[in-house]
Amino acid sequence: MEFNKHNTISLVIIFFTTLIFLLFLSKLPRYKQWSFDHQYILNLFDSPKQLQNATSLSSINTSEILLIYVYANVHVHAYGNLKYFIETAVRENDGVDYVFILQQTENKPIDETILPRLPQTNAFYFQHENKCFDYGTMGWFFDQFTIGNPWQPSTSVTEHINRNNHSNAVFNLKQYKYFIFMNSSIRGPFFPPYFLKFASDYQMEYHKPFHWYTIFIRRLNDKVKLVGGTISCIPVPHVQSYLLVTDSIGFSILLKSSTASTGRIYAGVFGCYPSKSDTTAISELGISKLILDSGYMMSSLMSKHQMIDFSKNATYNCQVYANPYSDRSVDGSSLEPYDVVFVKFNAKKTTTDAQDRAMLYQRWMEETKAKNRTLR
Image (cartoon, rainbow, N blue to C red; front, side, top):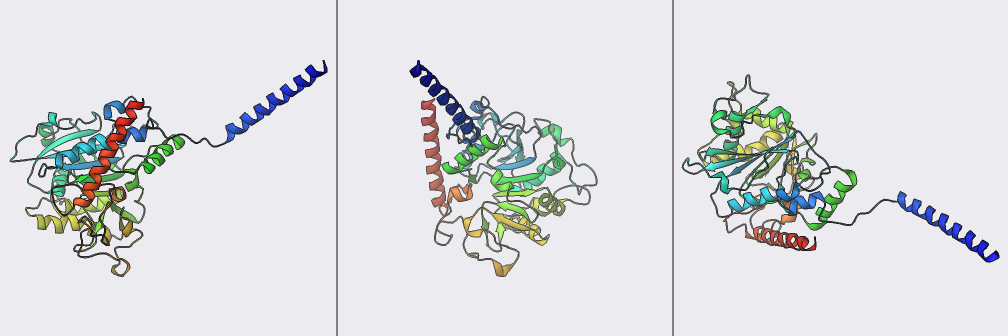
């Protein structure tokens, strides 16, 4: 009897000790095992169709970002760049309205059925005769398919919409907080695995989306109104135009330069110019100049160019005679895709270092995706 009594008391003590220990564990932070089932990992590794079956951590019903991508099939990698971006980054309900403008050759319509498939609700193909460079083509889109330009006395949306807009969508510029401009001369986004783990854990822990564009728009603030992957100093400091990100204030500054008194958009940084030199001077360099002249700052992802006020000549150390995209042009080194996220990916022989590295990272990512599927 004495043994049974002591045994019972011991069992009771063990039970309550275990219960207290379990309660203590429940109060500790929960560290999650990294899994490719997390939504952000799926964003970068799985196809849009597969992603539809994933559990969404956050849904954004109204897009706050307008992204315009100008596609011109003028080099052998253009289609691959478009395909990689759509399959890697473009998702339904990711807070972005995507506009892909297809530059026609000799005014011949492009067969959209052979192009990467887009989400149905927030991504659209538009076709445009290739008579303007990138920002002139964007000006055409703003002139013909948007409302809400604060510098317009009246809407400039015309019957042209009914002829060329397959979706019958009219884009209200007042709806958007951020604007992203890019073209098919670049490939990305590229992120290292440790960043993917961080982004995945962030989403799971805080139930907030962390999309590929987050690293750009979070650099914008009350002082910084223009962000990109790289800054070049040829011939003056400017964010390189293959990828530009701004907010509604910065975009309003750019629109003001391009909007005529009639309300039409055909001049300034969004003007259509006949030569590359005019486009470079007025659009590519002009965008950064307008932002700086308005009292704001610009920034890029380049490690070399952090915390620099480019509006003050004495404060920056910039290599005037070296385009950062040229091989070994950044203090004797070449750009790192994981540093700038998007890299030049065209047929030029002077930008092969970053391009080759990006190809390697893409192959590794595809291999990881294939391995992950075999484990499911």
